[in-house]
Image (tube, rainbow, N blue to C red):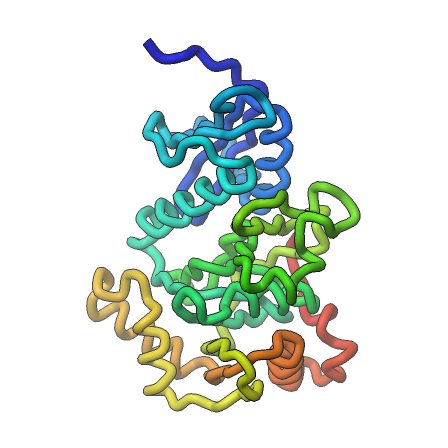
Length: 309
């Protein structure tokens, strides 16, 4: 017979694209961490019961290792709290991709919004897309996602999927101001773990963007000691760069191929080779600013946002 748990904390309903879920725990301190990290995913419109529950339970006693389950299925045992949260985020990504695929063209991509214009940052793991996304959000652009970008097949708009920004150990140094020891309040910073799950949304200083028409595709490639350069891509080059990072292109058949072609033709497309994050962000901000209201890049970056946080 299973152990009867006392759930001392339950989140509000949460939404990751079409995936609806909530999280419960028997550890008050873990509950505070969950609320801070997943606040950007609060589903303010849906008050009905959710179908999926993540349970984070103390393996021994409160404050110690945590077991992670989804709907009674074990995901991980005896994780430190920060890493237990990482397991939840990983599984939510997987489930969001599975449930949103029918209505959206999905990409392994970061995405930000600048003044109503979407910027896609497609790339495989290790390309630097999450680091670049975090840097651009830190510079004042609005956050859409750092991992799974969703293009609505019906409207052609990029949709926000405001999961916490996942920062890997190789980027801790250049994003140290987003780390566990930074931020004016606990709710704006991640707890320590093998990866940082950086909160976004209200109270964090990292605003969430609104659905927007994509205007730029920038394909990042981090290379140690490389010169930081932006290089224009042809429509064909952009199409293939997007195609290799598309999660569900085959499932959409010819409609997906046409949508991908419209995306490549309708955006200004570039590859970005970088070793210096600040320089990479400066080049992107200059590019985006030149295409907006005409204000100087240095002063316009925060004002470009127009976010719905």
